[in-house]
Amino acid sequence: MALMEQAFVLTDRDFSRVRRLIYDYAGIKLSEQKRNMVYNRLVRRLRSQGGVDFSQYLDLVQAERSDEREAFVNALTTNLTSFFREAHHFDLLASWAGERAKSVSAPLRVWSSGCSTGEEPWSIAMVLREAGCRAEILATDIDSEVLRTAHAGIYPAERTESMPQARVRRHFLRGVGANEGLLSVHPELRTMVRFGQLNLQAPSWSAAGRFDAIFCRNVVIYFEREAQLRLADRFAAVLAPGGLLLVGHSESFPASHAAFRSCGRTAYERRLT
Ligand SMILES: C[S@@+](CC[C@H](N)C(=O)[O-])C[C@H]1O[C@@H](n2cnc3c(N)ncnc32)[C@H](O)[C@@H]1O
Image (cartoon, rainbow, N blue to C red; front, side, top):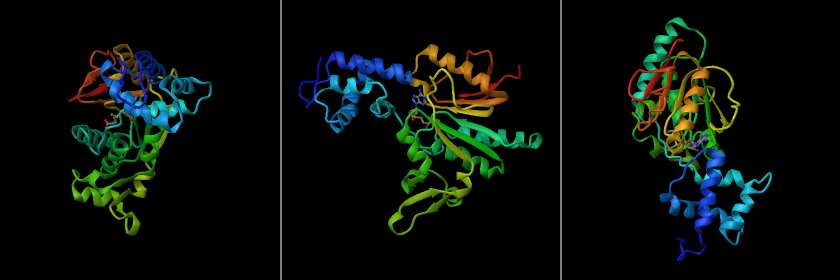
């Protein structure tokens, strides 16, 4: 059924096409119930591009070397996140990193593989800085827009309200004058994190090398089961034996994979063999 009362009409055909395209580009499976969300998010893009209808807008998205494709993907991703979300993972990381530091001197390599606006990788950096661990954190996302915010590392102070004030004071610089009310991550944290665009569904990943811990939380919710299992395979291949894989509160895709064993709430350890 088309949404007739709105300025533009998202026909059944357009909606199916949107669902097919976002699946092809990002592996995101949008349900029938997302129709209003799709309309609201894409109508802004359609207007900004001066399009006459969704069909023409989608032609633009699909055009060869289209710049609009990235904006289309950005518009349809869900980016909800917060500092120290699912706090038990950060407690686990702190104790795990402390133990590892007793026997290994190399910097810890951590991948935040759907980092959204950056609260997750900056939280990882804070915990590892507190633990006195040398670390290299890679933070990636498919969405180029959220990556800009993540990389800037500047947040309204309200975003840190649930954090202990001592932690905020230690890891952020307070803005003054025109920047009053803003917090900027500490320069020492900035040396620990590097950002890049990466589609987890791409046939090969630009993020090379081995990781000691991978955060993939609240990213695969809209992926098909087979895609989740493929991801478990690929994470197993880049995680060091004994390394950690941390997933979101409603996710369990590593649970049935032979390379992983559960080591806590939504936490998995890469088996040694
Ligand atoms: C809900 S946020 C989760 C952020 C953070 N991991 C957390 O748990 O708070 C999900 C993120 O996954 C990203 N994402 C979705 N599909 C992706 C894909 N195919 N490759 C990489 N990132 C993807 C979205 O852009 C979004 O920023």
